[in-house]
Image (cartoon, rainbow, N blue to C red; front, side, top):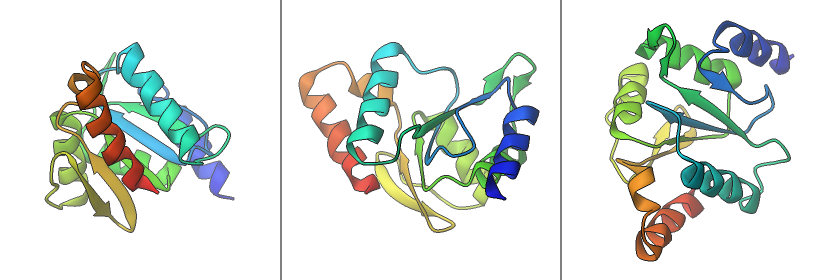
Length: 143
């Protein structure tokens, strides 16, 4: 039953969303994340036991322009992930507007019962071993 809603979201927003209706972690970003960040997010999801096809990606900037807050809320509620990760300040602003809730950067937050980990710039954290450890410490809070 829930899968049908997820499938309709993927069909409607296919230019902006990749994943499966059963993805349990939704990563929101302004533009596609780089290879290093993508690998870190996928490995983290697997290590935190988010399932076999755990990660869906929502990229706000698509071929038809940028998604708005209502689109983002429709996608999140349609896919109904267990948790969210915003990888950049733009994604954080979108989620904040979508849920009419202030969000704290580089910290875990709650959005309608979901853990939402909000990064100001996840990709920048992938640059050194020390900042990678900081990112991992925050990602572990998705459990």
